[in-house]
Length: 235
Ligand code: ADP
Ligand code: MG
Image (cartoon, rainbow, N blue to C red; front, top):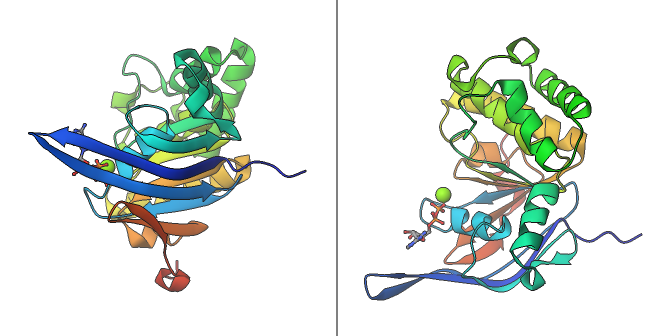
């Protein structure tokens, strides 16, 4: 069977009106992410990585072009339809963990599953499995403030994968960590995404981290361009 890509974007344009001027940030982005594929989105600060991820995450309107998630053209959807896709088909990891401060690590990973319709026992089992796979088996009842920065991001990774999304969107997921911790958290993230079979689009400006993903594309002057594999570095 011919499965649709996890993400398919054609001719995506997005501009912002700013002080009487219009800034064109995305000028016709074309990008496919296949099911199970992990794609690094490179580009310097201000190149539009977050703008692209917010469009793909159905978090913002205001763009034109076409965008499909798992074969569903999202232009035809109303608010409810977009929310359903976000909950069931997408997972998000941000630069800052955005965990709920009054809930434990386990509860933070349970909650999106309950919202998506899972039962409590199954949701707790899956949350414990994911956190265990990320090396947090001894941290299940810790609150975010009782965890290190790297541990907080691992919980955010578990939360993003909890509902078995077809596509994970990650916006500089290790950008707030020191280099050594970033390497380790990214390695765990990539292992888990591969094990789960999700696809991922990961914005970063770190070429060494990008080189560990399946494919690299770069945002340049408002368009997405392939990057030659020559940038791959060992390790
Ligand atoms: P990146 O994530 O690659 O650093 P962004 O997508 O955050 O880049 O921003 C790209 C450009 O779009 C920047 O010049 C930024 O100032 C502009 N921009 C982003 N969001 C807005 C907004 N809500 N209003 C006006 N300009 C914006
Ligand atoms: Mg950004």
